[in-house]
Length: 264
Image (cartoon, rainbow, N blue to C red; front, side):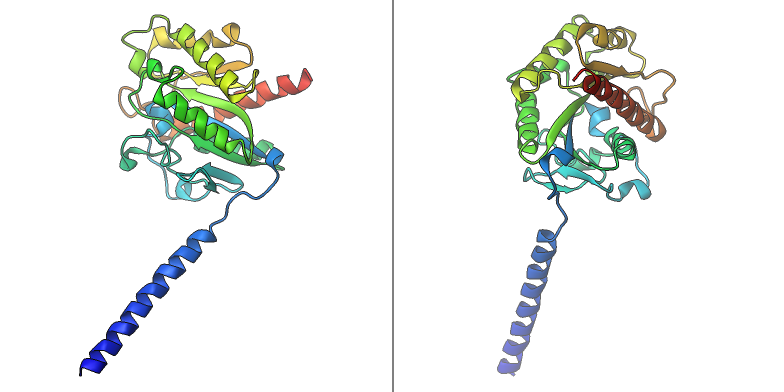
């Protein structure tokens, strides 16, 4: 009887080890980017809750985006799928991360450029003020560090910024702070004319007016309007609106890139 029991235990343990080994093997086989550095166009997505993602996403939107990769917790590439802010090193709880503009931005960019892949570095956190993103803060350092990691296998093409809700009560000097942030990021990432696009927030005129002045203040920048968009609450855009914002980011980025190419 003892021998039989021992034999059963050995079988069970062996089966468990087989499952573990199989799971590890599957994980190792997970597709990653292995193409040329120049063919992986990398974008850094930073800001607060709308960039982190608060809108719900559909079952279809939960599937991996073809030719799009997400920088994960190990600073390596894996197929990108929602929620895109899940590997942010500064984020709030995992359950809070939902649909952000990066999803529709990626689809639109890949539609226009069929010969490249996209790499997303998403490092946002809800409820943050622009002061928390200035040079030498933890948020700033992590954004730069992860973007630099991505540059080892891809080519950084631009930055998407969506923030301003938390500065609505104290909007003075927002544009100047944004200008300083752009200058610092471009310097530390080693790309003087790196395209930078800022998104307007919901019904915050004093902040939005300053964001709209960005293209006239800083070269190679643009902004995305929040006019006529809808929210689920005071600040968070709904599913349709967040996808509209993402497409607008893509259109502005394509325009900035075209202007830069024409000047070469």
